Image (cartoon, rainbow, N blue to C red):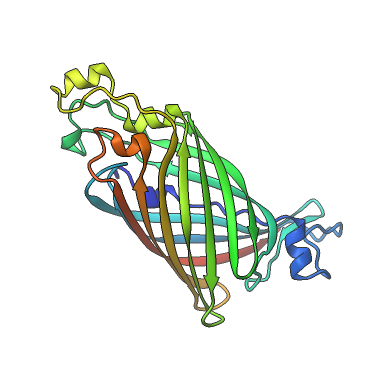
Length: 269
């Protein structure tokens, strides 16, 4: 089983933008429509490979499959969200769905962690706000571990966009991740029992919440046609505060990357 792939964990569920988005793009086609035309759904699937640290603070990477899912368009009950046009670029304020999966951390997979308790896999679900133009976007998300760590995390980010051609989009921007004390203690804390079990290899450490990491992300997307494309992401994050000071952390610098094929689907019911 994959131990921990942050890139896989950071698969964003991109919800459609709010009413102001489509109104700015095309006032003649508002995002909310009272005309019932039958339910419809537009979404994008992404499949590829990723490499990332084995766990938070690890000094080595591992590779694993990378999967993603994003909602582009929804028409239901006479209301329409988003736009079915594959060339549509949402602008203005919007609401994002957000999720992240974190694989389990075990001493069996990572022998250097002998003495530490295993950490179960976690699934975080949440939402956030986004403001975008054709040239940049800023966003913030809050998630809760509905399975696993049962803690709150938040992230802030921004991107600038460059479009050398009508098919190629480049993006780059800063990222910051925050976690509450339960989150920090789950992944960076060491109890007295764990110190004893490790024979003193890991000293007792009470990890507090706050800023977990800061970094930058680079991305590129290329459309082969209206349905098929390829997307690549490289992320650099530096652990901060108690996350960096934790005896579990072997390397403050965390690099991950992924590349995948995207396929857009539009279904009518």
